[in-house]
Amino acid sequence: MNNSVINFGAGPAKLPQVVLEKIHDHFLKWQNTGVSILELGHRTPEFAALGEKIETSIRTLLRVPNDYAVLLLPGGAQIQFAMLPMNLLADHQTLNYVETGYWSTMAIKEAQKYAKINLAASSKDDHFRTIPAIESWKIDPSAAYLHFTDNETIGGVEFPQVPAVDNMILVSDMSSNIFSRPIDFSRLGLIYACAQKNLGIAGMCLVIVRKDLLGKAMAQTPAVFNYDVESQQDSMQATPTTFAWYVASLMLDWIEEQGGVIEMNQRSLQKSQLLYDYLDGSELYRNEVDAKYRSRMKIPFTLRDASLEKKLFQQAHEEGLLYLQGHRSVGGARASLYNAMTVLEVEKLVEFLAAFATREL
Ligand code: PMP
Image (tube, rainbow, N blue to C red; front, side):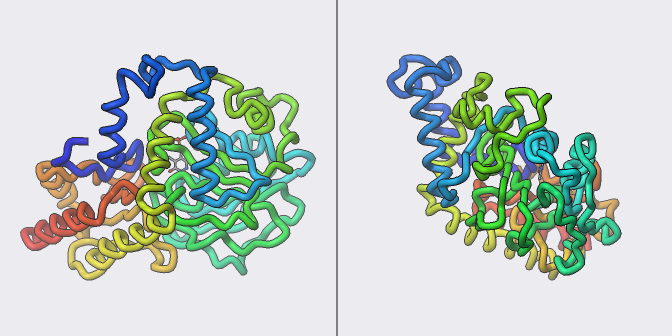
């Protein structure tokens, strides 16, 4: 990224400047291999060492229990929407899903192709601005798992913690908030996250799965979509997305150097509070998410006078504040405050929004 601009995009998203510089410096010759990381074979000892280092970092940063496998799979998070039922349905008939926004709805649509879905809860009638109280969830106890989307990237709704559902394996899409806080694995059977937000670049998906759930895939599951096969092959059943692995390793180093996920959580609380406090006190902007479930990573907001939106984006762009436009499905504006975003950069956004409001009100 050019130093004079700030990338608020939803993903592929901003990377820390030092990570970009490292990629630049190592680009033509990586370590002592004599070749670029782009040219390095995945069966070389150097790449195997990189894979091991990534796994160790993930296990350390997230305190992954030993009975979970760590997989780095090709493709993004949407592939998981299909891989979950393919791999985990086994001899169950149904799957529980909680619907809290765009991405959980997509996950349901895909899973429906493979299994009967029990919609345990939905906030659709509340315009996806909240999470239904857990006491109201209608869980089918015979289902293979219960799926929830930890952070709805478009709606800006985040689970404050893993829902306290017992006697049911929980599966979670953590694409847009992984590595932003510690994870309590005790109820979780599987989590997954595409890499292009907090773990580097597009092309790769992190899956962490309890090992006793492996080995139950539908017979017709392609080998590259089979968690058990990938686990046995160290995520190299097919040629892995080597460059995405490499960038992930740099991101993990960076998170470690910054103080790990506890520090990331503190920063994300500080950054998001800064922006929410400003929006809540302003006459012009509005965030309508239930305060209990507001996301630390993704803050959508609208302008009371929607006709000013175009002007806002144009002036923001002129000042180097990029990609604040909301998702094409909902419009409005949104700021992505992933790990790479600094407090200072959020302060700059607030200053800009305040100056714009003063001019327009
Ligand atoms: N789930 C969530 C929560 C997301 O934010 C995204 C992407 N923005 C996806 C799934 C889909 O990921 P991909 O485009 O990598 O398939």
